[in-house]
Amino acid sequence: MTRNTHLVIGATGRTGRRIAARLRLLGTPVRAASRSSRVRFDWSEPDGWHTVLRDVDVAYVVPPPVPGPAHEFVARAEAAGVRRLVLLSGRGADGWGDSAFGRHMRSAEEAVRGSALEWTVLRASNFAQNFDEDVFYAPLVEGTLALPAGEVAEPFVDVEDLADAAVAVMTEGDRHAGRVYELTGPRSLTFAEAVELISRASGRSLAYRRITPDEYASSLVGQGLSRRDADDIAAMFVLMESGLIAGTTDDLASVLGRAPRPFEEYVVRTAAAGAWDGR
Image (cartoon, rainbow, N blue to C red; front, side, top):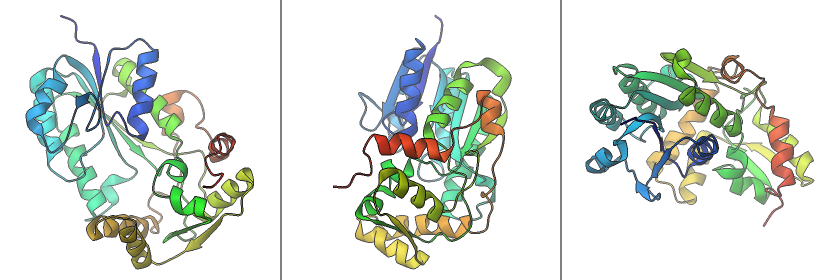
């Protein structure tokens, strides 16, 4: 029997749902798995992994939120006959020190890179879509995005580009094997500059305000996050201020054979769809 099923972990998330759709359009058999999918996958329920991995050739993996489970998953993938793993990771993950973000990303990378399988790691910068699909969205549409980010710029990457890159890596054979790609947008912007572009394209008066990490963590707790999770997210901004991930790379262009989408394209596309029209 020919193994050609492509497994997408986190298939209802920002990257997974885009990757699954692209693979289906190519005629590739897809097994879309997540905690809320018909095919259930949960990092805390390893007893169900054997069903998810059955007859899988290539797997796209979003790392677990804590260190550890990725090693067991990779071992089971090897035993199940999976040939290739494509791991989503964070830009500069090996330089994030002892932060929670760094620990769980490094643990997943170590599991994948230490395996006997073909593997590729996609280390992505902050997503442009964070401004309309994630934690930045609610405060932004209220009028002010307050974050502990200063003048250090961020090369926001468009998730559409990331999905294109993931599909290329999953389907193009061996040329991406053993590679770690640092994926960025074509230029870096401060958060204040990003919000200004969104304000202009949407026609709304939107502002950026810098706050302290403690203030930001408290605001996240007010939105329902645990204090631990809120402190971890706030710590990520402190690490970003080091400038570790402020620069751009050519890796996305190398994978795609074209330039990555600029942030302005994302802004125009998203504003035209009415994402920031308010409530």
